[in-house]
Image (cartoon, rainbow, N blue to C red):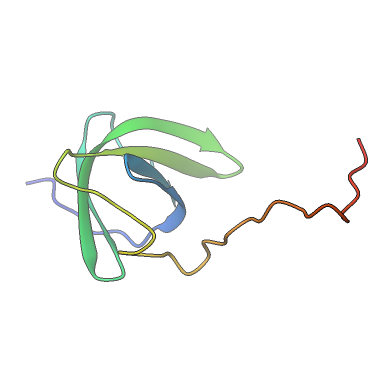
Length: 91
């Protein structure tokens, strides 16, 4: 039995998947259940990359798992707004 529970940092989430940050790698294809705000999201690991002293694990949600901002919103998720006509952008 390889079942384990970890507290992770949620980097990104979308309707099809998400990215979490861990101190350990997770094998590709591993089946996961990510719980955000008490709601479970089921899927599998589609990538695992080491960067900046941590592993970034990509999750692809199952067809039965659908996220939307109206259902669950991570605490650090912010909404970016497009600048209005009075904003100046330098390139």
